[in-house]
Length: 113
Image (tube, rainbow, N blue to C red; front, side, top):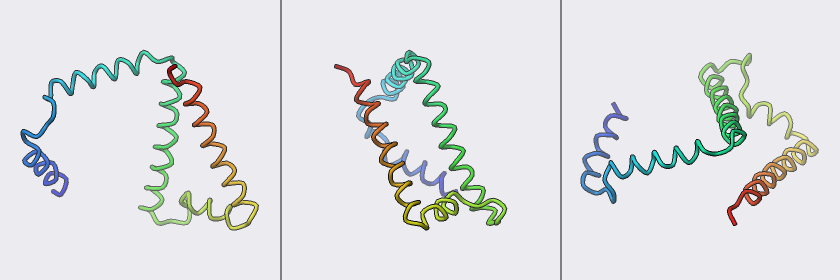
């Protein structure tokens, strides 16, 4: 009910407030999808794999929170065991910095010139 109420309210309040027509918005979305599909296969596979990994982690945590069972611990349970010690915190921090640097370097390497 809450979601339907929110959608109804958004439609009622937002009526005639759009900057562009729905047809223009859909056409822009289709252009974006076509441009994304023209990317190299490796980029598409990479995005799909990251989506699966992130979705799996979120799904795992949701199920473990819903079950509240010790047989299916949450991700924070494992992270807590690793970061309990000083060396674990250092390793997790170094991994975090490394992943961030890798992402930034990847974007800079593919930036248009």
